[in-house]
Image (cartoon, rainbow, N blue to C red; front, side):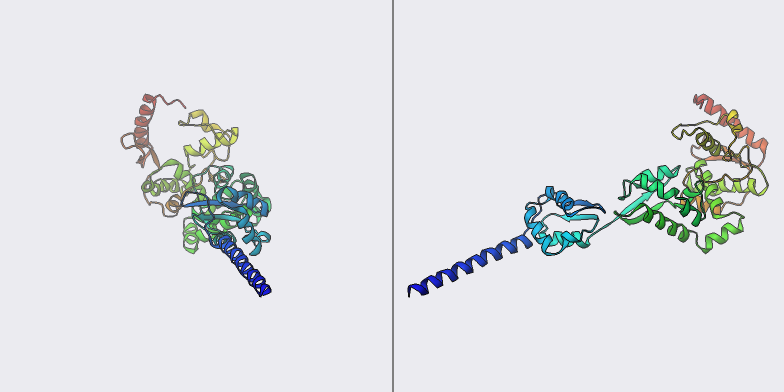
Length: 347
């Protein structure tokens, strides 16, 4: 009788022990284990992250890191880290946390436009994905890639069509570059390629001319008309005589791209640079700015007119006065020069 009581007691204790252990296991897996108050928190897991790096990253966001560790080890996550950007939601349990870190890498929206140089583009992209600006600029300038893609350092900026794209955060510099080449090829579809051929320009020349148009006017509705002026000059063998190219030539020659030039002087027109369209008739060797899609399409579908000149309209800021003859242009120009002198703009 005494033995039976002992066995019964031991059995009850074992059952209670298993119950407690089961409850602990259940809580470890299915009870909320987040410590942050916000609705969600973003976690970045680098490509070279170790399991300890993940643990250190999660510590400020998790109540009981040991229970998370137990579940992560049991589910094999500790040996199979997945880099990326993850959104952890308030109240998640360890099972949900591990599942999210194993398969919930959420893409980021990468946006860029209006960059002046490849180095500026690299600086714009770096805060948005894992790749840093050094690796990005190295990838952008890679000679083998440029040669295979039929670009060079002067034309390479034109390969990056400004828009909003989705990438995974852990995208490498090379992966970003390759994706942008695919987007460039997609942008230059059969319709655009045919139109470029019809107007006698290569896609790279279109982008370079579009960069000048973009610098000339911020008004999207005016860009086809400005493009028409340059196409009239180009088709008739004139020099483009575009002030923005002179400004770029000054920056490119001096290496000082931080300088601000509001007024082009007559002495600037003599600078010896292939970007100086007052000196050389050819379209510059590459874009002077990253043109918007609206500017590229403005060149492809430029306005057919008889204007050869334009100058800023001081009565309608942002827009320009267009002229068919030099005499008419000079009258318009005198108004602008008088106004800019009154503003005290020397440079």
